[in-house]
Length: 219
Ligand code: DC
Image (cartoon, rainbow, N blue to C red; front, side, top):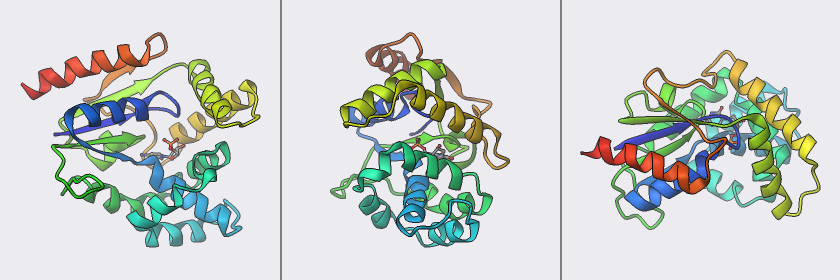
C-alpha cells in the first residue's frame, strides 16, 4: 500500500508519517529532503538562490546517498535551509529532475538495512497529486499558520535557535504563499484526498484518527 501525506510546512506530516511507517512496517520518504538537498547545495557552493541553471544542475545530479549525507548538515533543517528549498522547488525543471528519484522509491521499498517494507508512506506537497497519483490512500494534513508557527518555534527553540515566534510565523506564511502559488505542482489536496485539520488535535489524536482510516482501507 502507498500512503501519501501532503500539506503545508509544519502541519505535522513528518510526525504522522513516521508513526504510520513504524506501526505498519512501511518505508518512509520525506520528499522535502530532495528540495532541501538542492537548496543546501546552492548555499554550500555560494550560489545565488535565483540561479536557476545551478539549481537544475544540482537536481540533475542528486543521488539518494548524497541526499542522506547532506541531511547530516545542521543547515539542512534550519529556517534558512527550508527557505532555500522552497525557492528552488518552485523551478519547474528542478521538480522534473527530482521526480524519478521520488517515484522509484516505491518500486522496491526497503529499510536502511535492506529488509523489505510492507508499503510506503510519502510526505510532501505534491505526493498525492504528482509523485504517486495512484496511491491507495491520500491524506492532506493542515493547521492554521499560527498553530504551525508555534510548533515549529518550539522545535527551533529545542535546537537552540534564537528566532522569535513572529519570525517563524512570517517564514511559514511566506512559504505557504510560495508553495501554494507556484505554477508547477502547487500545494493543494488531490481530488481524492482526505483532509485532516490538526489545529485542535494532539499528535496522538491525529494518529488515532488516521489509523482508523488506514485499518478500514486495509480491510
Ligand atoms: O516539507 P519541508 O519543509 O521539508 O519542505 C521544504 C520545501 O520543499 C517546501 O517549502 C516546499 C518544497 N517541497 C515541495 O515543493 N514538494 C514536496 N513534495 C516537498 C517539499
